[in-house]
Length: 208
Image 1 (cartoon, rainbow, N blue to C red):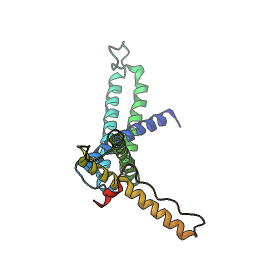
Image 2: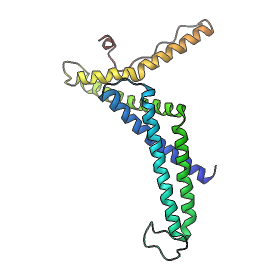
Image 3: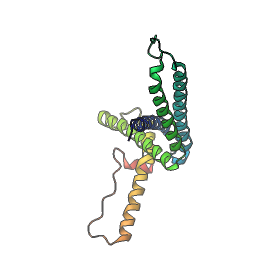
Image 4: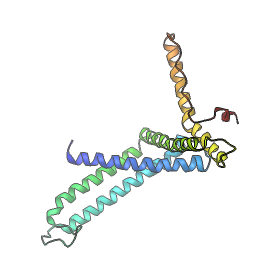
């Protein structure tokens, strides 16, 4: 892999991380603050728009570098500042422009790939759940989450219910599918695998 390809891959990695962060924040707002159910399809347009917006930024950066390169061409005097480019800088500016354009192209390809968008949303969902879980665990350690002692119990209970819908129920469903598939393939030779545990949740709340 050449240096330009490596720079493009690094740029895509950074942009993808920024996209996941934006999508994670959007999921937290919509599913917890607004008490809306989680649905990958509902977040797909936002994820697509986020990737396209990041690609637009890269295209704008490439266009700026192109203008800087044209302005620097044929100038051999000493520069007046960091961004006062000269003819000797045109090669690096051209390379930088290709890198920006390459990142933009890859981000647009990702935005148009439903599988990539879905994966990005699921990663962002897991990150959002991680934030909620960490907050809940912190409150459990500090206050024991006794309803009569926690003034925020009702509000945090809504968050716990959302966290179950976000991650735990899909995990249970996946576990059941995996277990059913294993049962159909062959008869069990040992005791069944225990079901995944919903940590940090009062199971009695599921019936509330």
